Amino acid sequence: MSSKSLFDYGDESSSGKLARKAKESPFMLIGLGGLLAACAIGAYKFKRRGDMSTSVFLMQLRVAAQGTVVGALTLGLGYTMANEYLFKKTPPKEE
Image (tube, rainbow, N blue to C red; front, side, top):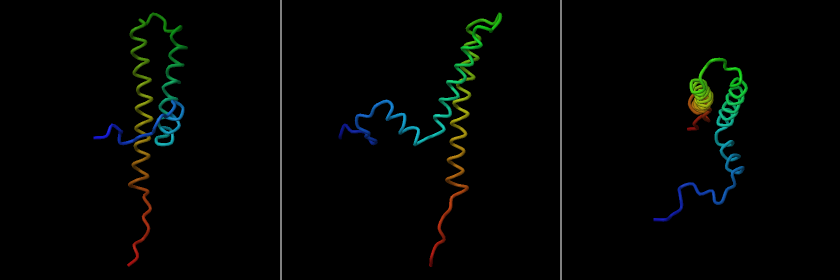
């Protein structure tokens, strides 16, 4: 057996890998943006959490951040499936 993987991209930098992944699935970037937004809002609200304990606040922040990522990936999957199955334009068969 060879030691090469099925998808061999060679020595790829981190930015090159992110650019390739963005082209393959653009909704991943939307999910990452949502994650960063949820974390930024959470960092802002951390100072103003009142009498809420830190562990409860961080648990709610984690659920919100995961929800944005899962929601974006679900929208991406729905978009891909709709393009593939519903809006598929097949050329007419010539007989």
